[in-house]
Image (cartoon, rainbow over all chains, first blue to last red; front, top):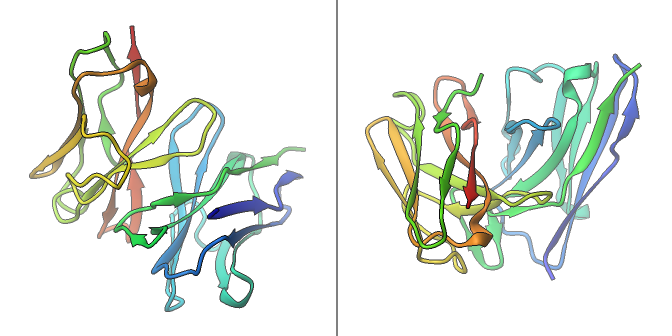
Length: 121
Length: 110
């Protein structure tokens, strides 16, 4: 079964750092890009970052300069290094990719179950 | 404040048709395709419509999407109780150089 499983979340103080991981299993990765999307409590979806297989990455303005996305293909893992965390970064963080099964979409076709990040003093 | 503006809420009785709107600008919907995601309560989002009007395998035919200019819409014909969820439009924004989501529309099935 194809799975994306996030880990690394938790409680951190403002100004602190966390590194999220998203491990892919059950498929041979043919994705063109991977992404992180977050959802604050009771709020809507907010795109955070995206990385293409080429290594090119993009970030939302709210996290640019503080967050870094990367991917280790040998470990089938996507990372999000989050530095200088703020209270407003508190959210469920989802990883996603364009492909599911043998089909790739120009959209996020496959999502993980999400991991919580809580920034508070 | 979301870049894409959606209908604040929608409701329908089972079997009715419901339509959700998504308004953007020339830098996002006006120049890129629109995707729609469904988020059932307590779960991760799921791709519902891609490239304006295409359904991934397994998505029921009662879901359809359309786009005109800088606006898009999602329609659910013959709404069922299991369609009660939050729905989000999304598109790439050339000016922001990022992916933008709509504000989300909760659909309530009465």
